[in-house]
Length: 444
Image (cartoon, rainbow, N blue to C red):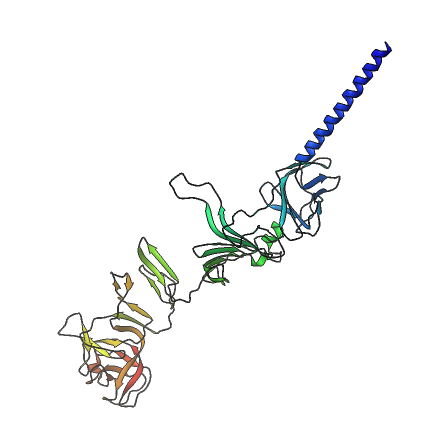
């Protein structure tokens, strides 16, 4: 009986020793599989994010729409506490939120990233659910300047090579979702991306550590200068030409970084500023010289011009120039020539110098461009006119008629002969032999 009892105790001790060894081995195995460097724990008043050996740490909390509601900023610590409030200090409502924790080493390299969920429950309870930890690596060694990408570092960071955004197209087709070039983030909160064909774009203030409300209201330091730029040129050398900019206040600039109006267009190369097409036909154009051309009708309450006359294009049977008096050519119907006799009743008017409005322009159908170099005949307004004192000195208000000198006017002193021969009224006196004065166009 005694011998049996001793054997029973021996079996109890042996089984206990074996169980202890198994538990130790299981715990050791579990500890060996936990390679997540982050330690995240919920306390009564804070949630602590800790990365042992980190030189700096940053934690961001997002709502389910992806909006940042709390950002610790990058701090030179290995542990960050979150008091479960927003950036503005408001107590967050019960629900599920997302978090992202990033840690950097002493050399400034990103050493660990952790994403996950945190549920805020009644009675100050907190539940944590983490996603697999991720560590950065150089994903493409094609470019000698490639290195791990970092956002918010104390120096500019560059990533080179190819960024794969989506799945490839079916076999035999073109690839989709691939951008080959490089990206850059800098401490000013700017994101820059370039591709090999010489095009690039930048978002200024993209990564600034300020909450959404301050960006919308423009109260954050970078909120008033958030802009998006599109460039062309050698982006790696910095020799860039701005294509378009979109400012934070909604202004759009084409060819300029700083638009002054809702739409500002600038060009120094002499190209058209604006061109509008109906299919392949250009119907509206604003040239770099300020010239505006349109194929349609113009409607407006008023029309302001720097010149003082209205003119129309005419066909002439001989060479004429600005200031000439012209008459209807009796030998060439539809054409005009210089007046050749005093008190000529075939006079049609005065050749304009620089009319404010030109009627009857023609376009070149082969080039779809305005190409009409015919003379312009003033039909209303004020124009310079060639005059002589053949009929005596000219005074202000004198009627002007054709003289015996081709293309030159004189004063009309014989009223009965002036009927049907007047081309204008003198707006200034003339006492010389042959010269030029300003006249008010008056055909009667």
